[in-house]
Amino acid sequence: MTSPGPLDALRAVAGRDLLSALRRRADLLTTLIFFIIVASLFPLGVGTETALLRAMGPGVIWVAALLASMLALTRVFAGDYADGTLEQLALAPQPLAALAMSKVTAHWLASGLPLVIVAPVLGLQYDLDAEGLLILLASLLLGTPTLSLIGAIGASLTLGVRGGGALLSLIVLPLYVPVLIFGAGAVEAGAAGLGATPHLSLLGALLLVALVFAPWATAVALRIAVE
Amino acid sequence: MITHTNWFKYSSPATFYQLAGKLTPWFFAAAILFTIAGIYVSFFVAPTDAQQGEAYRIIFIHVPAAWMSMFIYIVMACWSGIGLAFNTRLSSMVASALAPTGALMTFIALWTGSLWGKPMWGTWWVWDARLTSELILLFLYFGFMSLQAAIDDPRRADKAGAVIALVGVINVPIIYFSVKWWNTLHQGASVSLTRSPSMAATMLIGMLLMALAFWMYSIGAMLMRVRCIILERERNAAWVKSVQGDER
Image 1 (cartoon, rainbow over the protein chains, first blue to last red):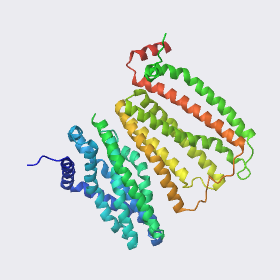
Image 2 (cartoon, each protein chain N blue to C red):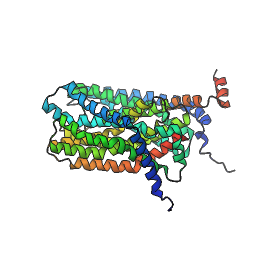
Image 3 (cartoon, each protein chain N blue to C red):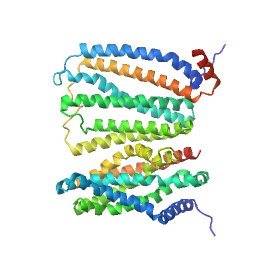
Image 4 (cartoon, chains in turn orange, blue):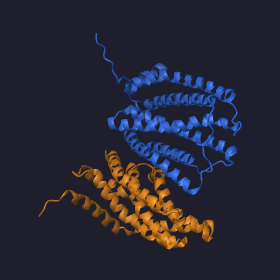
């Protein structure tokens, strides 16, 4: 029997989180249905004129994705914080930033990826063409991991704090602005014939920056929370 | 005889409390003097603008407030970082004392900008890059303050606030440029503040005087607030009791 390597712990943490997410499917579905409902409310509010919907679609879907992924954030660390698992993770020989990273990865797979998969269907409601749907899919695929990474900082800072949910949104939503701008901008630029590549590249750059800084900041925040 | 300067004398809340008390009136006095001089220059010396008439004079409030709003956020993040890295209590207290003043400056900048925009552009609000990023800066201040207010343990509140201030300071340039590029995509540069005609020297002097006034006010307000925070946090210390006895 071989001794566990350094990556095994990360895989075990991610695997456990994914498994517990799958055991509580209702939580995942709630987020997903919230996303669909919010995106479907807008045409009821502003009317069903096709040109208007086509212009609004990318922005509305992106804002809905933003809100839905924020709604799911409270679950990333809350359970582990409540039952003491987080303290064990903080004591583990592996770097806490890496463990936090694998938790965020599992969280994105469980709650971010479903949003990305459903989004093209919502795009059809807003009469986006095939190219627009493809760009929407690509922008969400690049953007939602960034949302999870930034959100994890906010989630770890608000652990066990009064008014957690509303406070979390106050902290995290302003930081989401660049992702929203380039995400929705990609689809709009594609529709305007300008090409979506610059926006998608910038989204990729944001993801890389978040990958470098966010797990580290999350680890600092987690240590503050369990102190 | 060799005298040793104790560089860290005033990093203790107890000694800083006394120092801040002595310095506060001086900074407020300087703020009042600079305000009087700045108002005089901006209303009676600076010429009427050829294009904008008299309405441009709000610039003497608007621009200094906008400068201070950004500068205070950076200073706040610096003190937060120092507090987080070296575990110095006073640095974190200074950071929390700066936040309300920074938010006030941001609000003044937004409000006067809107008052200026109505006669100039015919609208209270434009989704201009500067306006939008200033608005987001206000949200960042709110986030910092409400996070600190929500945590009861002051040490944890300091550290959590420090993390969010540092994350915010990395984000401010990213937000500014993203809003700027988004803005150029949405609409042509219909409103450009950078194309404004070259400024008369007296206008610049008025603006700098007002900037100094705002700066002095901010320091004075910060010192006053930090004194309150020190008293609150150290209320069980013996020196606070003796100070309160003296002042009663």
